[in-house]
Length: 207
Image (cartoon, rainbow, N blue to C red; front, top):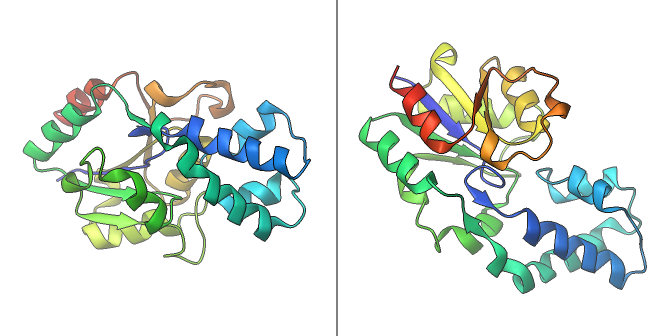
């Protein structure tokens, strides 16, 4: 049986506007300037790693303020078109499905209830559950262990190069969620599969 493991942000839910706008406003409050390109580059990374990459001073303070600002922009989150149908079809097909995300449990809980997507998954790996997070293999390996997945029959679906690196480091295929990717050049044609729409993934899974 095939196992399909999903990222959340930029794959199932469009959350980039919330995270990046909140971060930009937080940095502005602290009179710290970073370009839009720099901010969007860290989307998908855990908060501490994002701030480290951006070389932000007093990262613990900034992280706390950033998290506090998220609620101001949470209404900008939306479920990508066709995603709900995709999950329903995969569930009917009895595929093993899990989530590996850089969200903390609290971050995920803050918005998943609005869309009811948690019902489709039998395993969840959040930030802090493994020693290393993406792009390391650890969280995907944990999900595979929990799902009792065969690596040759497992694919990780995501929207960032960090997702692809994590999948490949775990020895499994990576499927690009094309609907959530803005710049494909960073993948350097190394994605194993490219799904333009959620329905494309459903059709692939039937093969």
